Image 1 (cartoon, rainbow, N blue to C red):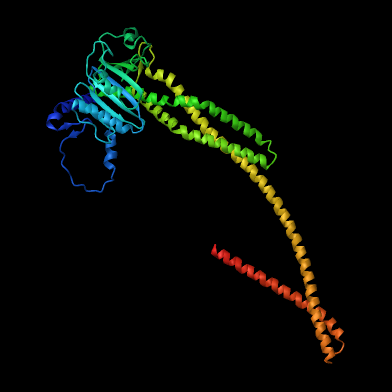
Image 2: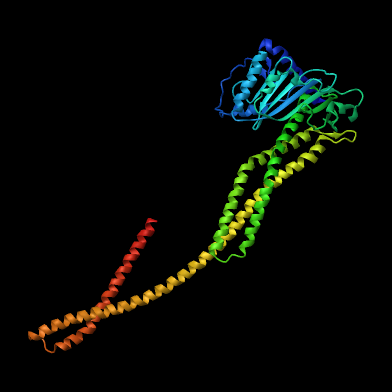
Length: 479
């Protein structure tokens, strides 16, 4: 009861502001905010630059205030390249035609009363919505829609492609309850879906079919909802229609790529089966190359489809949220909107979700298989490296023995030459009479020369070793 009174006061304030605000320049604007001069106050703090924009984000895209009866039509149009400028130009043409203010450049929404109808334009991430509200009391539902007041040539020139279009007829609840047979003619004979919403304060009828004019239809019978509550209910219904179509955009994509995903899964299974039959490094490299090619295909497909599948998930969550807000209850055994969408929309969404999960799972499996083959390659390379190290160790030992043999020969050769020099000296000294028995001196010099050569080589090795240690210390200090 309190909510009803508050909404009623809000509705009255908005209506009074819309009636008197045009002449006085004060009152409430389309967002429910007070317009007119506001005294400026010197700020005491240094605020974040985008604080005001972030704060006002809560007040963007407000719900419409709709009195019963009314006719509402909405078009959801997908964006195209340079679509924003085209939309501004298109809305400006309609505004100039009816002599009203056009939308501000760069605006994401535009709410304007054109006299006979109200236009609400909102630009979203992937689409723009055009909602036309016409207050009328038509004797026959959908006999005259809100679009009938729009210039046909303006409607035909709308930029972009329509993804969703819906007529909502808002009427007072009739004194006598109506059956599906009574209202089937309003929906061109289609089978009807109906539910009691908002705790039994309204009842909706629809067929979720495309009718002869290309639009869907919803008949909303209002029992005791005020204008604000009615506007929120209508907005939920319009969002459900638009978001469910955005959810379904992923379904054709999922069906199209599903066979290719299954083919890549078979290719991966065939590669994994060949892992056990690997005979050498060439087979490992070949399988690793095939896995790399398959991984590139999968990652490219994930890149091409990830946005669409992620957007579908977000839109599906919005549809579920709006359905919960309807607070539906069954009527006369008819199928409710929530039951119908659960039966038709959920399987399509699950299909897209399954394909997305299959792609992600396939990517992980390829990564695991690649890691397995790389491990085998590393083991093979390590085995080869171990064999090479063993061969190098054997060669090093052989080289050491050869070096030791060469050193022994070097000692003998150098000793031989030194002894030869001693022999020449001894012969010369014997000829001069300085010594006798030169051969004894030569024989005695042999062990002395050998000892000198050995000590010299040992000192040379030690000096080389010390030099190497000094160089290593310098390298460690630099690092």
